[in-house]
Image (cartoon, rainbow, N blue to C red; front, side, top):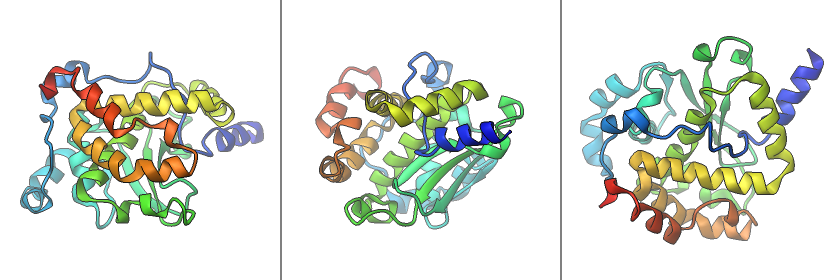
Length: 233
């Protein structure tokens, strides 16, 4: 048990596992349930829809206080997660936003797992402009959508697979780059391209200075990828 706990801590230290294209969920048969791409969500208009958004997309969810609308809008693009327990929590963390399975639920059945989206309350001064409170409304939706794309990826992974992937992520920078960029593409395929681009426009210069810019799609790359998808035509 001590060995297992050690591997879990090590494997989830950075919050995510590495790229594995075979296991990252695409919209698939959920595509007809996805909301269409929206260039800009309006917070005032969304506030009028809060009750209906929470009724449909808030089941089994613990929403982040003060950012409930952003979380619900991002969740609306992931029908796969409609009944999946997901908690958005605030915690001091070296990375501004991460997503991972809740450790205490890993040993049970996959369909009974609980997932976390962690929003950091304190990061380095260099990364602080990229924290959720410092982003625009659409950029917040975009980064939460990125983290939920990670959550979708975890759904069908076994415990051993999660541990192995976490270890690879912690030791192989190329795996980090490939998987994070693929996760961006998953969010775009879930029709969050405009919101992800808003996040990238605001945060990519910060990530570049921190030496992490190569891990995420640049705004122009997001635009180019969107042009290849029928939903954005």
